[in-house]
Image 1 (cartoon, one colour):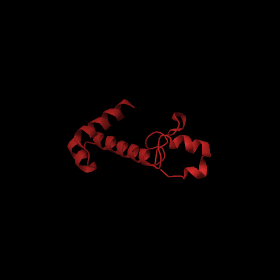
Image 2 (spheres, rainbow, N blue to C red):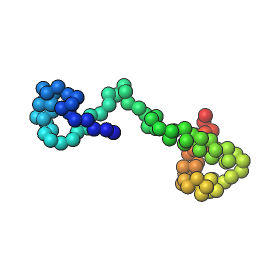
Image 3 (cartoon, helix red, strand yellow):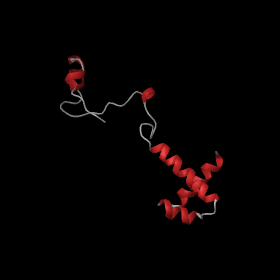
Length: 90
């Protein structure tokens, strides 16, 4: 998240209106709902996790136990079970 000086981007009458509510403090202006990005959309995180989950599922079917996968990937056994269940549904 980056910050901008209000005086550089907003008209003076808008600044005066905002100052009625917040004078001299930083505020967060949320994105419009139609321009919001979903979690992980702006990074490679989703693709990395998807690839990891495919690998977990593959190794599970190769004979690795849930406990072994849990230790290998540093995840709780419940997380491994959830990943396997989700992959089965796809």
